[in-house]
Every structure is written in C-alpha cells, then in structure tokens.
Image 1 (cartoon, one colour):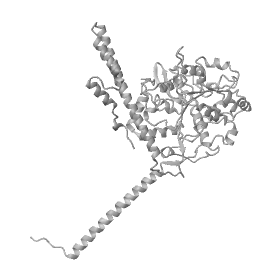
Image 2: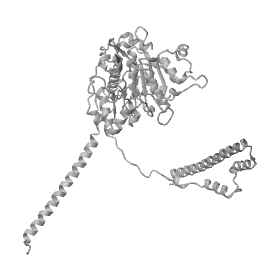
Image 3: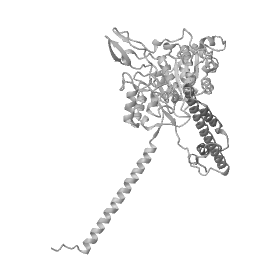
Length: 526
C-alpha cells in the first residue's frame, strides 16, 4: 500500500511550525537562565541587610554603616526589660553608640537568668525550669550621685553599697526541693565583626557593673599588649582614675596571694578589674607548684563571685574535647588544649560569674562551641540534655543550616548579637604582575636557603638516629659481656660522618651524597 504524500505547501508549513517551536523553546530557556542569574544576584544582594536596633530607642547612632546576616535579620530579638544604671552623660555624649548600648542591655539582661539545672524531689532527679527557681528581677533604680562620686574617686562598690546576689535571683524555698549543684548564670555572646568597637563595648559592660556596685571583674584576652588598650577604653568612659588605680595585670604579680600584694601598694585598690591572657591561665610556678588559675579564682572569691568574666577573642579556647559530664578530656593534646581546659575550669569554679564571650570568629566550626557552656544550647532543659556531644552530633547531621538555626535561636533569646561593618561603597580590584626583578631575586635566594636548611636537617636527623641505634647496641653488648671493639669502631665511623671526605664504605658514601642532594620537587623557583 502506498503511503500518502504531503503536498509541498503542507510540508513547508510543518517545517515553519517546527522552527517556531524551537525558537520559542530557546527564548524560554534564555529567559529562565536570565531569571536564574537575576535571582543569584538578588541573593547576593540580600546576604546582608542594614542593621538598626529594633528594641532600643535611645543612644547616638553608630558612626559607621552596619549590616547583619540576612538569616539573623529575619529574627526579632526579645524586648529589653533591663534598665541601665550608667551615668546619663555616657549616653547623651555618644561615648557609647546605640549598637554598643544594645549589646550591653541584652548582655546584662541575659545575666539576670540562670541555666536550667537538676533538682532532687523525693529522691528523684528532675529538670528545674527557670520559672520555678527565679522571679523577674525588680526594675533597676537610677544611678545616685554618691555612686558617681565613687566612680570618680575609684572607690566603687564599698561594703554598704554592694548588692547581694539575691537582688538578681530570688530562690523559692519549697519543701522537699534540694538543688544538687550551684546555679549557673546565663552567658552572652558578642559576635560583632572587626571594627565594631568590641573593646569599647566590653568597657561599657565594666562601667555598668561598677554602677551596680560589683567590685571585681576579670577580662581575659590574647595578649598583654591589649591591657593598655583596655585601660584606654575604660578611660574614655570617664573612668580614668579607675583605670589607673583599679586595673591590674595578672602577669605582674608573683604567685603569692594577690590581695596580700595589692594591700602593700598604697596606689592600688584590692578590688577592680583583673586583666590576664589565655597563656597566663595555664602558668605554673616551678618552685612551689602554684598556678595562675587557682590564684585568679582565689582573688575572685570562688563561687560567690558575681562580677564580669569576659573572654575577649574567645576563639583561643576553641580546641576542646568534653566527656558526658562536660569536663575536659585529653587535655594537652591537639583535641583539647590546656587553654581550653583552663577556660572551662574558670567557668565551673565561678558559677555566678556574668560571662561574656566576645569574638568575630567564635563559631567557625561546630566543635569549637564546646567551651561556651553558658549559652544554654545543651544540658538540662534543652533539646540536648545529654550534653555537648549530643548537641555536636545533631549539628553535624543538620549541617550549616543547623548552625544558622541555632544562631537564630540564640538571637531570639537575647543571647547573641552579631553585626558587622558594611562594605557598601568600597571598591576592590585585583592587581597582577607585582613581582619585579628585585622581589624575584629575594624569593629565589630564600628558596635556596630553605633548601640548604632542609638538607642539613635531614643529615643531622639521620646521623642522630644512627648514633642512638649504635649506642643502644653497644649497651646491649656490654650488658651481655660481648666484645664491643667492633661496635666502637662503627660508632666512631658514625661520629666522623660530618667530614667532607668520601672515605668509607660505598653505601655510606652514597647515602651521604643522597642526603646532600636538594629535593627540587619540594621547593619552587620563579
């Protein structure tokens, strides 16, 4: 049977329709690609949003343009119920911007709460809720003129003016309820980026707590050079006398009792701000065994200490390994440094301290959160009651999205603020071909030097190994009453391996020549 044939006009029409469909498909695809590109660009633009305090209605604006991560910007912080006690001129003169004041308000408000803990009810252990053990603190009174005079005279926090711990925490005396551990005060994380004035904000925390009558505070940072910067920030808040007479550097004290040493200096107050470095926390006196950590805890007053405990650049304590009880394990290894263990011990020994974590890179990896046990992300009353390891397993399972959700959760509780300076208006360009003949010569000379050092290190290491091996063999032969004359000859030959002559066994000569060769694959010349 013959197939029906299409006419020329029908065939040409069908071809035209097919080409039109292809053109429509191509245009649709191009449109979708353009929309995808626009969406990606829109996503890049929406990565950060302009930031202004939403619950604070006083204070001078921050001098620079500030932004916040878009995911955090989608969460509203809690209402501010804390009343500042610092002098009004600090605010009116703009010595602290509204962003810095916001961080101080939320941090001090966070310090009014306690972490959930266990209680014993009729011999049964059960979690305790915050509403069950604490009551809302009374509104803070305005700063009195006598308190301001005490600030100017560096006599802040006398015995009559000291506020007791019960003003911030009122325990309900309920029958058959016995706390099994001391209540731990909640902490605050200041995650502002570089250039936001975190040092001035920490100084603001000090000022606020001074006005509350708290006498002793601890400021931990990465370098003793930052001690002068801390004093400068405190002086800029009209506390120059306090910075001179009441700020102390832990490294300048001997390992004896600090209060005894301060009592011998007429120009220094026994209380005040103790500045120390993370390295100082692990310092130990070799003669009597005393250490800085116990010395600092003793100066603070132990478990009754309710002053500030501020960890500036707290990422220095990031390498930590914890057991199921929250104690540091494998201390001294790469998994848990002594510094991280000291930070954990300091928080454990000072449960009522008002902890402030401060770092722009505090949470680069989930396991670096281990020392921040005052944020309330794990433990009793949380989604991870078994401790940090359960929290870490959950984060690793959820990935980056899980970390963002927890950050949003912390902000919603008023436990986290993370702002950064905007790069709006900044221009960036890549500069190439910056190497001139002079820089090229310096680079080549340096690689030759490192080559020589590498070869010398290989030679010395191998000779030391051979020497140790020969000495061990000689000792074994001597213990077994064998003739060691031959072994001594071999030992002497090893000692003579530094000579430049090529005398000796062919294998030894070849080995020395091999070690002198420069392994070019390890170093690169321009």
